[in-house]
Picture 1 (cartoon, each protein chain N blue to C red):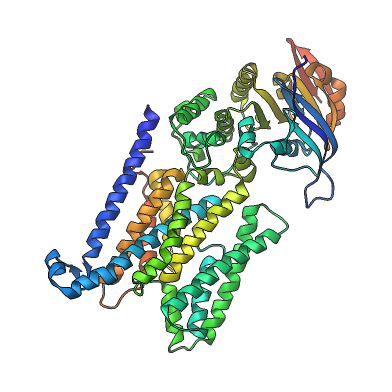
Picture 2: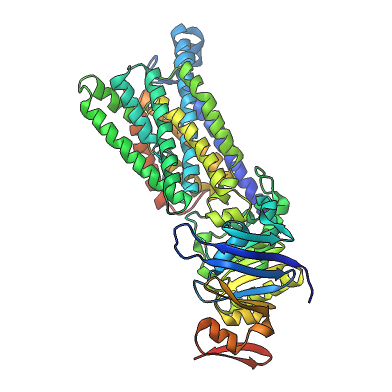
Length: 335
Length: 259
């Protein structure tokens, strides 16, 4: 049947993306600035104690976290864009990003600078952002559920963003302000095994829920009455998916800071390649997002001796790729 | 004609939370199995609200809606989705679904919540597109369609749902004459296969071309209900639209003339 051969070709494209991710990951393990900028040889890894420790204690957890980061932000991006029926929203929406930023700055100024404290505070406030948005949305007396969530999210984000402004204003300009700024730019330099393991359960939970519901996301992108008439529970199922997305997102944001643009552009790239059906767009976004983040992190580590914040690179490279894709007409994957 | 009563509205009162005026009060209606019923009424009569009540999406403040002798809350959402298909007036999505992907969504109520559509679902969706005459466009983007084509795609999605009761909200509002003809033909065919059809319209001609039964609705009240011959009269339509309408027989068909 014609239709089924097309499906296979999209599935094949997904398999190739997965293979590409594995290759990029393996190459990245050997890439860095030790002993010199570029690739490390296998010989070196087996003979040099320092090289082994570097690869297994620093690069591996960091690269694995980059994979989780890319997958979470991109999957959450797909979910947010489809559920809100708006290709311009991103996973930080609903007060999550601004909440996390505020939480991190709060910890840096009033609590301690330790990575753990900053991380927990960021995660806590990310959830507070979401909770507050949800609570306010339930009390808004007009509009559909989606509109109410959007409005509440915007208001809560503005609130936290103002709060962050105040914190930056009162922060010590020599010690605290640079640290806040650095966190806001995003990066994975502080990640080791404990950080990776601490976010793993939340991320796996979020991604598994999203992946299991991947076809259903299409249904939930329709308007309320239609989704209902097709047997869905629009309010409940959307809330479940958004929570899964936010859980994964706030977990990765808490260790990586603000890594912008991944959640916004990767779903667009996946849609350009695979069409709109979330059955393919969700896994494709997860794979492309992981590849993209790992590559950007490679550049962040290797390009200069002082590390470039990851968030700057994802924005820069993402924006360039995005412009290229928008201009190009044809898509390489058959739909 | 003594077919069983499929849908029954019993003393339904409904008002939207923000509105002062109730949309309907003490509303009673019966739809018999196997009929094609047109809900005819001017804009703002409460026709779409009535469809949403029937779906169970809106809940009445008082009264009962019975589907096949049981109130709606006896049915799960999926069961309702298997019973009733809705063709909304129009629908907007910013995403470039192909026609086939979009129509495939109609299979959802027949699938377990986390399942992926299989070969059979695909076949049914392709067939539904074929029935509305758009099978040659199944890989086109839904965003490239005209308003009329989109309306036919929405019909195809409801066909893929294989409902026993098909609800259509102003199904012909964006259609040109040839597509109107195609839809009328298709709905007659479905009715012959035993599907009960209920559609709203504000065009008397569409009602007379298709319906066996008629419900005249105005301001949340039923003005009159009965078979086409009983209700589609100069007198009733004049009252309904508050405009002189005369019904004449032309080549064996009832036609409403106005002005």
